[in-house]
Image (tube, rainbow, N blue to C red; front, side):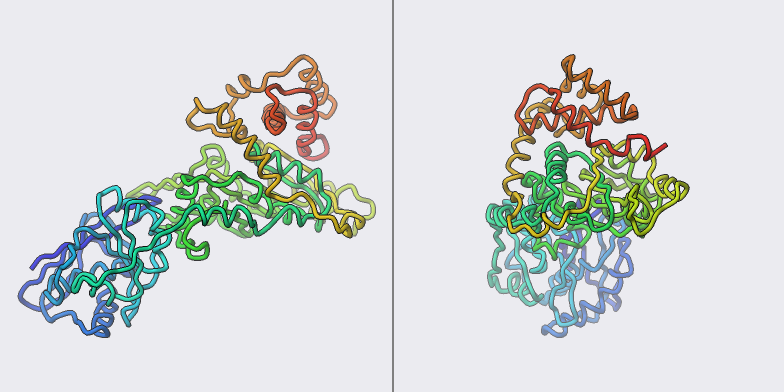
Length: 513
C-alpha cells in the first residue's frame, strides 16, 4: 500500500513542501531515500521506540520511504512525526478518518512519543497557507508562532498519541489562536529598558531620539562608565512600533534560527543584538555548510549593538559594509544561494583610546599617539562612512546621579519618533526601497534637503573651520532633515544644520589623520 504524507523543508527564510511517500512491499527492510541527512536517517530508531511505547510498531515488512523532491537535500529531525504517520497509515495500523492530504505534519519524536520543538514553524505555516492546506500539526511549543498565519488551522500537540487519535478515531485537537493586538500592546506599554531610568545625559538622549527618528546609524565615543551601553540598550524602546509585516519578517528569521522559544513564539518588540567582539565573520553575517542567519539578520528591523568597536577584528567589520548598504546579505554555496534580510540600525560604542581616556590629564592611563593611531585604524573609512551620527559621551556628574527626578519616559519619546517617521513615509511613498531619511541617496538628498543661503553659509563655514571631511556633507544634511522632521518643519533651517554639525565628532581633526 502506498501512502503520502506532507512535511516541509526550510531554505533561508522560505519553506518548500516535502512529500513523504511510504510504500509497503513483501520482504524485510527499512529504506529511507530522497537525500536525507544523518539526523533523518537515525529517525527509524526514534520512531520505533515512540510507536512501541504507545501500542504500535514498525512491522517486519519491506518499507520504502521516499522524501520528494528527491534531489533536494533534507536536514534535521523535524520529519519524525511525518514519517511515523506515513508508516502507521501505510501498514494499516490506523485509519484515515481525517484526510492526511489536508495537513502539513512536522515534529521531532522523543522515545516516549512526546514532541520536541522544531525550527522554521512560521515559514512552514506561511507556505502551507499558500499551497491550500487546511491545517498544520506540529509541537505545542511552536503552535503560537505558526498561529500568526490567518486562515490556517494550527494544532499544537504534546504526544504522537493525540495525532493518532485525531486521524484514527476523530478525537478533536484544540486549535491554537493568537490575539496579535494584545501581544503588541503588552510590549509597547511596558518596555524592559526605559529611558526614564537614565540619569542626566540629556544631550545623548536627544541624539538617540534623532537617530531613531531617521533610522541613522550611530557611534558613541566615551570613557568607561559614561553610560554608552546603558543608553544603547534603551534605543529599541523609542523606535516606532513594529508593523505586522515587520513582525512576520523578523519572526521568520528567528524561527529559522530556532530562537523564537525565548520570545514566546512571536517577535512583537524590535530585536536588540549585542555580539561579543570575538565573533567570527560567519557568525556575524551568516553562513555555514547549510547557511544559517547571522547576527545582522537576527537584528533585522531592530538594533545591532557593537560594544567596543575597535576590539572587533577588522575583517569582521569589513564584511558588514555591503549588508549595511543593501540591507540584505546573500550567502552563496556550490548548490544553492540563500538571501537573508538585514535592515538594522547599527549602534556602536568605543573608548576614545586604548586606555579608555583621551586628552584627560587626570586619567589613570595615558596612550601614546602611536597607540591611538593603531587603535583607531581598526575602523576603516568606508565603514565609518556608513555611520551618520558620531557623539561624544561624558561621565554623569554626581549631582545628576543623585537626583530623585525620573527622566523622560521612552513612551513619550517614541510618540515624537513615530510622528517623524510618518512624515518620512509620506515623503518617500513613491520610492520602493526608501522608507526613512537614513536610506536617502544623493538624488533624494538634493531633492529633499534644500538649504537657504544662510544655512548654506553656516555649513560652509563649519566645514572649513572644523576641517570636516567630504563624507560629512551628506551625513549632516540627512541628520538635519531628520531634526526638521521631529519639529514637523518642511524646510531645513540654520538651527537644524548647526545641531547636525555637532554629531560629526570623528570627522574633525585629531581623530583620523
